[in-house]
Image (cartoon, rainbow, N blue to C red; front, top):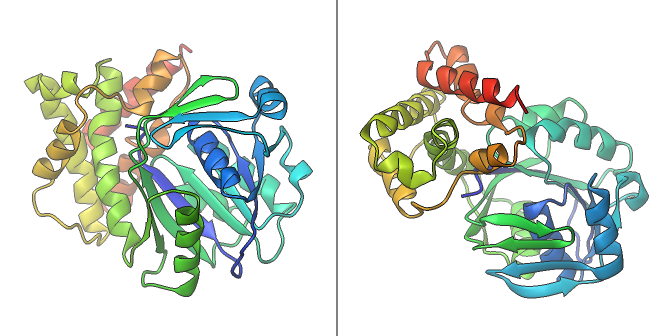
Amino acid sequence: MGGLHLVYIVLGKGFLDMKIAISGTGAMGSVYAALLGDAGNEVWAVDTWAEHIEAMRTKGLRVEGASGDRTVKNLNATTNIADAGKCDLYIIATKADGVGAAAQAISKTMGPDSLILTIQNGLGAGERIAQFISTDNVLLGVAEGFGASMKAAGHAHHNSMRQIRLGEMEGGMTDRLKAVEKVWQDAGFNANAFADIHQLIWEKYICNVFLSAPCTVFDCPIRGILENPDRLAIALGCMREAYQAGKAKGINFSFDDPDDYAMKFAQNMPDASPSMRLDHLARRKSEIDAINGMVPVVSAELGLAAPYNETLAAVVRKIEAGF
């Protein structure tokens, strides 16, 4: 499933031939790097995984799956984003807890017209970026339906690439929003601009809350939630808490029956596992604080309770304490 991916873009003036640095070239970051590089942009792949960086330097970056099978050899790869210098676009594709550090590093090299784009699961990326960089020109978006994974250093795979949705933080359609849409479209992505991106972010977010912590705690793919009434009741409890928080924040959901919406989302991929469960299978810490763990935070600000998400987030954190 890959989780919810939020996209925040700090946009300068339009760019034609773009110099792009991608901070965090794991599975999703590698897909972005390969397709954007193959489209003729100057791409810098930045990651702390030294073996991955060396593989990209010596053999190129191979990405296979829904976009075809390509090995892109014109990428620049480094463990230090300062090596890239000033870029037109910086893409932050780290996990949620790495966004702040990435933004801080980028703030030292970016120019006044540079774009900053962060793609991650859950909520809160804007607040993390705001600690280091002004968000006056922020766009938001959602990247969904990629199912990306790393096969080996220098080799990524993705099952699909459904859509990248983009929008202005304050709503509406602007020239800069359409310009960013075209950058992604020209690289082969199904990218679309929307006037109300907050609606789209929250509609995907409640689905991730529905599945992420429940599949992780019960150690099962999505089917294991759908086919077990006890687990399903807990998962729906998590989702309803997120939905109520969104309603209280004034989110204009496109549906009135969140149960039906979430169930249809899950039934489309019963054999998939959320990225949170995949992290635990690999004994890696997850993005619990940005997904289920964020529901109690937002709910408390609105005077609401979120006991289902509080409980499951606590269990996930307890499990991760043993990693």
